[in-house]
Image (cartoon, rainbow, N blue to C red):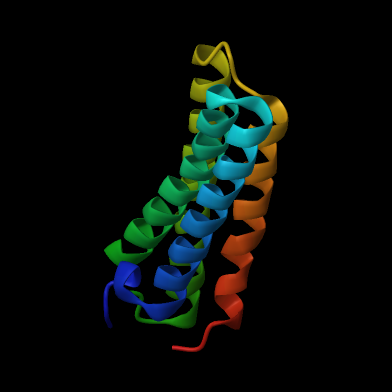
Length: 122
């Protein structure tokens, strides 16, 4: 089994998330200035890093059965959610000039893009 970060679906999702983050950052930068662009980038980074953690945790185990595979998926998903919650708290607690519409738009769009991995064939 190849490492999850090297699989085609994860690579595509990471690329789509990065491109969406950059596109929204450009628009937010034009609309709200530097803080808008930084807020959009932070919204995307939350999900990009969570996706990397998901793939890393998924690659830690070598499930031998269907049940072990489900457990590995739940563990990876729980790790992803934990990373997202911690990073949301960190950004919202520390960045005082955050532009919430830019941050949340990028965050939500990159969350939906993670689901697009199901459409990519290996």
